[in-house]
Image (cartoon, rainbow, N blue to C red; front, side, top):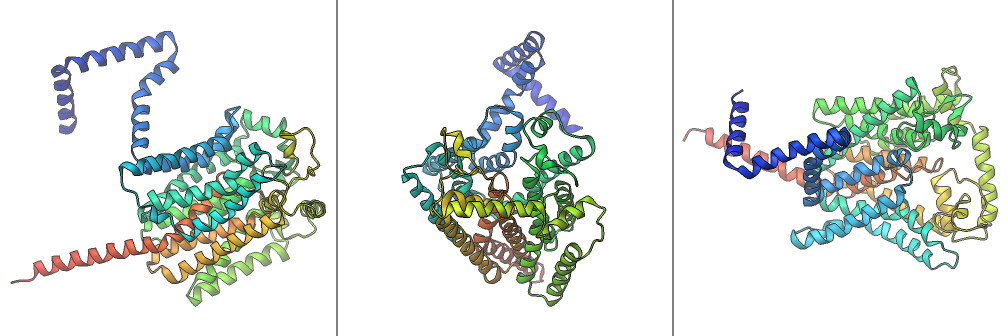
Length: 501
């Protein structure tokens, strides 16, 4: 109570001592009243929030740390914004934001010292190799620059941005944990929306997409409705939840804090719920691949045996039994292992047609031109209007067998090198557990990208962040070691001071 009385006294003293502040506040109150009365409450609210908006902009621009958090947030929700705000191009917005962010960092580094040497990781250089190949594609005679510019972001540019931003400005252990907590908040929001769709139905804009724009063809199935929450579609939602399920379930077992442990397990359960209601079969691969990777990293016989039993039991349950066949979620997951599934057969037939066409196009058809998308830019096109239905098939179609081979080689090196770092360079148990969780989730979603085109917003950038943290892991490990040594030294000094002279 004394604090509030003191604050009230200081405010009154300030107002009486400065006539300009008093007059300014009176003018603002009158203007707020006038706008609310004559222009509606929306104008009044906007005016009232203007100081907060200006303070937020100033805070963001004064520190790239907060700008990165805004960048990460926008990546997660940009497709949701695009659903409800017409005539915006999310790809171009994120590309412009990324370029502006890099330019801002260059200018910012002129006034405040930034250690650009931290950016020099193998992850960064490997993605540069892939990006150079995509830039060379600009010299093709049939290139369409607009299509190339829109698609260069998810193909390569965003991964390079993450490889710059994380080591440069979001590079401490507490930043890694903050990344996990911010992501968890987004997962909670997405789960609440998915729960609402499941029990209360779709809103007007979602219904328009489903009915008028054809989304119902892939979301209203005989087996039931596939829910997509705030994501573009159920496949994107399901695989995102498969990703977070692996990350938080594994990380929970290595957290020192009991609160963090139980909170991460809670997020993992929410992710499992989201994965199930999405009805996305390819998402099933993520826990299988992620848990298998975790087993390989484990150095304890009990963990290895337990992991093998869990993976084997889940595979046998889904592939060789009919238990739970009346449950549509279990039945949908079970079709992931059915080679005679109608959807899988259609995809194989489409890939056979594409294989014949791609034999004449070793360098692909060009970025953004697969699945008949070329008709957005030209009147006629000989490119087959066959949906790739897969991120890796899309890479093959748009960059050719040469591009796909390079892409797979780059990713193979990234994951192999990352595994080496975790296995031999990380000593801190909690950090190692978190990095293993991120690695297993990332490699799981990469494996699932064969089934769906899922490495766009927001999954692609989160997967890149996961692997960049693996690559800067040794520096984080050194940071924790220094903190532990400092704590031991401090405790030693306290103990020495307590001893009698």
